[in-house]
Length: 69
Ligand code: SF4
Image (cartoon, rainbow, N blue to C red):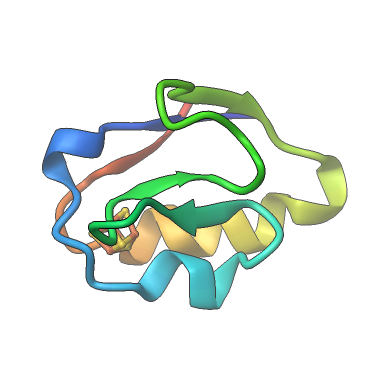
């Protein structure tokens, strides 16, 4: 699967990194980005072993800032 970030929707709640710490990180303002990836990157392929965690984050993000593609 692929995950898309809609960074303008992110409210910096911190939930997604708790659920999927190997995928999500935050910039200096707490807005979501991919771990170890430039902030401009808004799509990433998710490793199969990470999909369950990422799907949980997508479902629980309060602002639809994370999408499955
Ligand atoms: S769960 Fe959603 S709103 Fe919260 S930090 Fe992650 S992307 Fe942003």
